[in-house]
Image 1 (cartoon, rainbow, N blue to C red):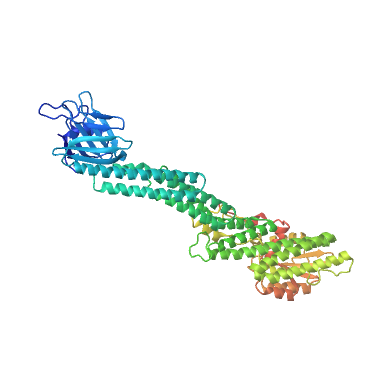
Image 2 (cartoon, rainbow, N blue to C red):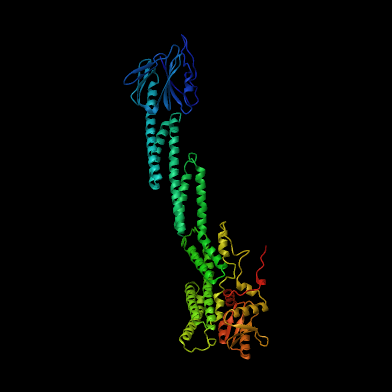
Length: 626
């Protein structure tokens, strides 16, 4: 006669039949010979029922034969039903016989009972049928458990197979670069896994042991890592797209691509990180992406500031004009980004950028005007040297440059339009006069009349090299994010404008610089020892008296203009020029024109100094702190 024992896994005692070994006697029942049944079980499985018998053992029927294994004298048969398999141990002095049938391989379960005896029968996948003889009491519950457990295992295993097959397909899509299809397929695998998980949970809820749930562990890990690999691949693909857009200066498309990449990394890191194979590597990739996005956010403004600084540093007005043009385009691009959005993604305070853009427009106009003035003065030099064809080419180049400056002024610096049009008209008169000379027509002396530009207008156009600290406010906006735009030209070692250096000259030094500057044009200069003027300059038979205004003043006032006009009326000169290192006071241009006083203000003088490479005293260089 056998026994059916239900194992109490919730704090009860373990049955002796699982823990003891040894041969029984005439009045006692033995156990197993080699080792106790509990020692045969794995740590990952939990015993649910134990079936025993003393004589009948176990029968295994196959299509071709039947094996009947019975215990030796004094020993017994012990069948343990766990949450993973059926283990049958048949004791014998010559050594125990051991069988194991996984629950997933059991296709059908039956049981029969008589008054004191019972038999549990189950058919194994492949055709064999097993009969385990035991007691009758409780055998129905054993059969129910075995049937339910085997069906749960079969359903879970089938779903696991579907998960595996689906993940293989997803991996193929990933390897082909078809990330969307790969992710969609992987999600189907997750659905199969969820079905298996639900089945395992239902089976394990009312029964001790978690072997069925543990069966899902490697499948879950594979599913998690496959999804992670696909999403990381999508993130890398989006990152490549972002870099391509960035190279094309499509900042917004680049940002959106990087955001897609970031969302993929976030999705990966939201998975069960205990199952991820390379979670640290994924974190590093995400952090690298964050750094890239940070650089992208700064890039438009960095490019603007870089061009801005290059323009400030340029000695050649033409080069400066190119850099100012580039800076203007980049600053405008900064303003266009995130237009109308309350949540700005790119660096650059709009108000500060607009303010700097206005300054850049002025500097660009000034630099373009300087190019035009240089060409005009070169034309004057060739004209005085009677090289009229070369003079005409320079005048035409000057006219074209003035048109460029006018286009800029009309677009973004309207205050300079009238002045530039006046200077363009002066160049037009030079062109007409030179063409007339080349045609053999008689022309008058061009020092008379209004052919020369009114240099006082440059006071409102400005020095082509800025006198302020450059794009400090814009760089400060970048610095506020914790990064630098590169070497700054606004601090130690920054180039100082010619206009600022001119303002530090004393009266004697400024007079010498004015003389050198006029010598580089079409005039020859000499000190006016017997004249009330500071300098007398000559061109052929024409004489012009030059008054150099006090360099300590902030601006040239009306008194200086009146004094220059009075000296011209009292002295034997053909014209009078008021030179200064500072601008005219507002509204004095008309007074100078009325009194027939030409003006060479700080802006015009610095332009001539830069264009003609007139040397300034080294004492005017700013001494920087070490």
